Length: 173
Image (tube, rainbow, N blue to C red; front, side, top):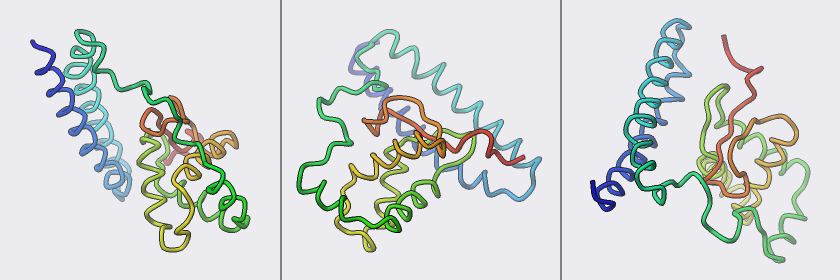
């Protein structure tokens, strides 16, 4: 397979994984425990198959396709001096509101991209806190991880290359 074909397939698989992730909150909301467990089991199998049988072979053949590590020079968590001044004026209540919104999109036992969690929270609060930069939301994810409110994998300073979830101890039966 040519690298262009592999790259096209890789992008398709990434989009498929993104669409599949939309099923998580729906499955989580299923009222019947057995039905929810069964749906999550099937969901995990599909994700694992896409990752191991479709995407992984492409990355093995063409390592440059791997998007699991950052290539940008500047982390997503950096604030310029103007943004820092703005953030410094946030009240404890506003910071708590941001944290609560970040946690609201997380699921126990299921990894979600930090970029998704940050983007969802930022959009939800954009009218209430219009001047708060996205980078600050990313910083709050790091603070939540450090406080033990979230678990993380990957590099939290690059939202696209990290994932978070509620701690396993908070999992539903």
